[in-house]
Image (cartoon, rainbow, N blue to C red):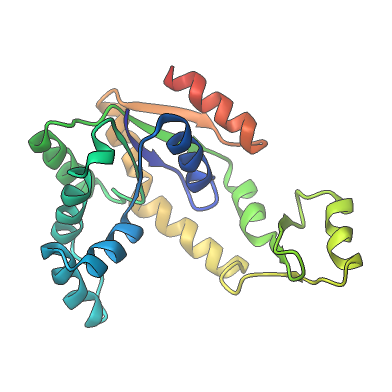
Length: 213
């Protein structure tokens, strides 16, 4: 099972990837995690990435692809992988396609977690953490009982600094401009599966596993 996971910020990619990973014994390959690990391990591409990042720049595509190649060569990826966070552009998707063909591990499927943008904004701007228990809540979707339980216990509902509407709108606009074209890219290759990502986590996961089977 070799998968690219697509979806806007807040669509639930990370959550669903972790469930797939646990049930199928395949790694979730997150570019951010890989960059940090490659730098920590001092690999060839990790050292290149460190030099660029230390200068305050983003790691170039060829370095990220090199790190992906190193990661997919590890034993735990022999039976498959879930790519999360890459590709983000059509050019990256073309480069990834070439890399996977070279490795003899072509992509099986690109999964789009599809959800209305108005719901995404509520998911992201409504996120709160209970300062006392650390429980993740949402002022729009959590029950009044759950929200009151936090405040009754002496906690506060804390919002992340970057969960404000202006920041969220910008992130979604960047996604629309740069990453949404990947939907057509993978659809044209007959590899796209769309999953309705609205609803409870387990409901979405049931749709996902049914589509993959």
